Structure formats: structure tokens, C-alpha cells
Length: 302
Image (cartoon, rainbow, N blue to C red; front, side, top):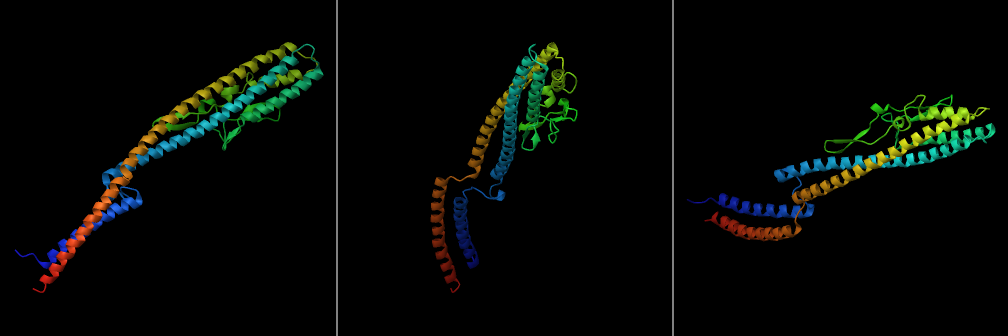
């Protein structure tokens, strides 16, 4: 059976084209640094890479959440430390005022000093991280505490039972990273810290001082200071947990990034060999193809 000239031409050009395609494929991998740039070039591995990218994006979002929560809690911890200092100062002033040698005039000066420290505490409790008031629960756009026209100080955030702010820190794990002002200083009412301090300033404003009642206010300061310090401990424990989760996520990210690189990134040493082989094959195809095509052209004249 005689093979036609067109068939010979097709076989020769096909061989050259195939060799050239393989050469270009290796060259493109080297230039791009990737084993494939389209899903169609390697569907199984490309699909795995897409899944890995999705996992890595989620993990990076978790890491951002952890870092933001950690920064806010570290700020809250420092703020509570400042508040403890103010409470210590109020404690000392109450001791001074409760001394029987304290005159009404001296008590009024002490009252002014205490009011100044209370204003500082309010200012500290109204601290913000980014655009959020950190002790206002879920009412982050509102100041946690306001000083009313009558001099009373009231909580302005969300109730503690509805005040949890949560972030996702790992797959299926949410984390509460805030404390409300009322969980630290007590709910508004006669026994709250600020209500008791209002009573204290009124006692210090009397012409006849009741030293016993003044001294009794040490208990509310001590209770509040203990609660503030305990809240600092809560923040510290939460930050520690987040640090652990951050490290676990980081290890997972490194593993998945390595898996992705194994699928996606080239082995330059192997491809250098492949390129040399592809070039050799291409040159051989050109040589054989040129000879075949020349012979085929000659047959046209026989």
C-alpha cells in the first residue's frame, strides 16, 4: 500500500510540532516558575492548589483576627493597670479623709482630688481600639461611661449578657475577647462603684464629717480593685490562649504552603535537564522532518 505525499508531510510536521510544543512547555514552566498556570494544564494538581489556597486564605483571616483581638486585649490590660493606680490613690485619700484630724475644709480638697481620679477612671474606661470603645460590649460606637449633669456616672454600653464580641480564630472556633464595663465596675445601682463614690464625695462635702461612713467606702474600692485585677488576669489568660492558637495556625500555614509549593512550583534542576532533552528532540525532529519533507517533495515529480 502506497503512502500518500500528504500523509508523509502530515506525519513529519506533526512530529516537529509535537517536539516544539514539549520544548515550549518546559520553557514556559521555567519562565513562569510554575508547573502550570491554567487549571486545564493539570486539572488534578490545579484543583488541589485551589483547595489549598482556600484553606490558606481562611487561616490568614484567622491570624488577622487573632492579632486584632490580642492588640485590643493588651490595650485593655494596660488600661486596667492605670485604673488600679487611680483606685490606689482613692484608697489613700479615703484613709486620709477618715482620720479624725481631717477638717471639713481638708475633706473638701480631698473630695476634689477624688473627683479628679474618678474622671480619669471614666476617661480610661472610655478607651478606644481603632474605632471601637473597648469596654462598651457590643455598643462599640458608644462611650462606656457618661458623666451626667447631676454628677452621677452611668454605664452606657450593652448589658454584659449581650455584650460578648467574638472572632473566629480557627476552623469552627469562636473566641470572646472583650469585657464590659459593668462586668468590671458593677451594674448601675446603689451598690455600684460610681454610685458609692458619689456618696463618698457627698460625705466629704458635709460640714460635720462622719469618719466611720467615709472609712466604709474603702470596702467598695477594695472590691473594685480586686475585680479589676482579676479582669487583668482574664485578659492575660486569653492572650496566652490566642498566642498558642496563633502558633498552631502558623505551623499549619507553613505545612500547607509547602504542600502548595510541591504541587505548583518547578524543580529547576529537573527542568534544566528536561529543557536540554526537549531541545535535543526538537533538533532531531527538525533534521528528520526536513529530510522526510524533501523526499516527499521529490516524489511529487516521480
